Length: 457
Image (tube, rainbow, N blue to C red; front, side, top):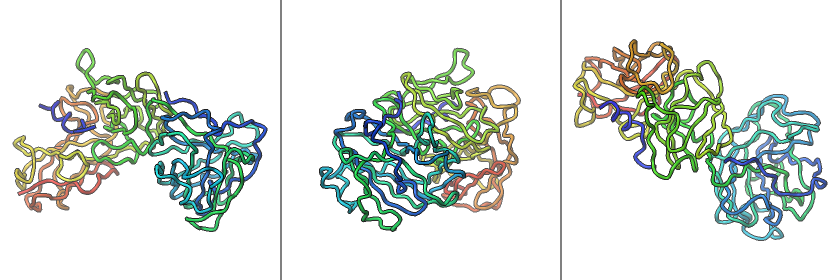
């Protein structure tokens, strides 16, 4: 019974990263140290860079472009001195609407009908992340796309819209340009605030290293979410996590199995593994577009983790995620993260509007994100021993309709995998009644998202 509960809660109802290549491929002698401030300027900017297909032998139709990096050779030393934060850094990719000679200073005229927004959200450039001078690899960190762009041939255009620097160093960062009119053009509205019109900055193409892959797996940090809430604000030790991407696993859903001694979950399913700082995580299921794993307990005490997906022996680029002590979230009946909670009534029946819990009775919640446990969590282990692991973070609190419920138990779900958290709570005798009474779960400083409900009579 309990194993079927695990699958019902977590399994969805549906559903070799190669090194970066230089685009365009140009003779090194053409590189000049010219400012391309528009793409990393401290003021709001819209800018486009257009690449000629004639000089992109590193790309072929069907390749996935997953991000890019800027060269910063103009800077004599590494930059920035302090972290630089853009409140929003949006990138749109597509083919050009016409020939390079027809490029317009009106941005909307240049993007073809296949334009795709491949990145949105804030962007942080860590201090000294753009090497300077004669650095062996003078490219900064990868600006990863949320959604990969499938190259379909033809001239390629990227449009960047950013809000300027929110905090940090208020000075322009630069990228190098290739000064040759054969290779493409850059159009930008340097600092004038216009979102529709720019001026032709220079004939030539910005020297940027695209992250390109063929048929290998791809995911971005935005695609890593709490499997219960569907929200992506980092990971915690033992968090049941869902990862969305491309070519992550087999076409057909593959369920994770148990080890030969039936004591823990395997760290591979359907030829897919997920590594957190090199540690293979227990895999609940894998599929082409979505996988679910349990973050290792070895993340406890860390602030970040480097995550790699391996599918069929081919690995993605590492993605850095923040690590938080606890990220509590309750599983819901429709797997959306909100609405009717996946809750059992005192008699073991499923809570619903048609089968509400009585005021003063006990309800059973299923959640994840409680963080490290005592005894220390063991990756993928089934909770069959004694004592059962309980959260290190304290206390566990449950409020229903704004009223405190009495928490009778908070710990591992008996017989189920480490990371699936069970809470038994007694409702107040005066709890508000209704088909959808708000319920909130807290552990330590972590609080579940709003929108989960329980039915009470």
